[in-house]
Image (cartoon, rainbow, N blue to C red; front, top):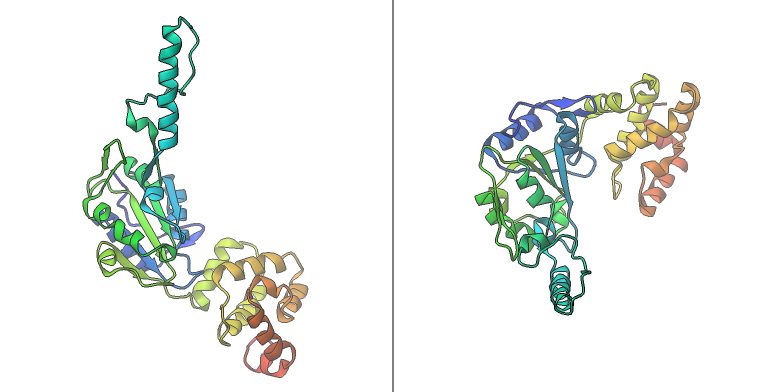
Length: 304
């Protein structure tokens, strides 16, 4: 039976009340949880940390522009099947000639089509109900990909190619499925209808402080205070790509190697800004607003 207890996070992950409720509902109802939100809000971390915390098997499918159901569910290895069929014919011919040695098929039998089905993350997760399945960044996949999943999500089963083997689970035993999206494209309405939906808003400063405390246990609070002021200043000046949670965590990992006063000086000077800013346009904008006009930088922030 799949885990149905109410999960509120772990030592390394904060799961707020609304997200915890949505995740709990999805597992109780045997439905996938679709999480949308901007990058860096912890969408992908939820299933990873949940599986780690509960000691559950984790199956991950990272979607891309060429994603398809065969990769996600299972594919039939026609090349291997043809090769083994030829080997079996050759072995029969060798036996007729009185030759005792045989060519190996690795224990596979061409009459057993299941030997040639390579299961993907979905088939593996459905074969192991007490597990976690992550479909990451589904909005990067072709539009037909989520549409092709409608039958499986509605009937909770997959049919293996060629062999016809059916892998299905009950609503009670459905693995915990989390689907993430950065909303690069709108998902089909029918697909969303098969999911529990949740939108993660970007953390405010208080929540970000809690997140930082879980990843950097011994960091000086003064360093965190100044870093947060700089971080939210950069998020509020209209960059093409605002810095995310992952990036402030990386930045702090870099600056905390220094003594407190030196670390604060480096933060104020935007030392290591490459951890936060990811485009040339944004870097040039910051140089104009901050490095070439420090009065505006100081006026619009609280860390001076």
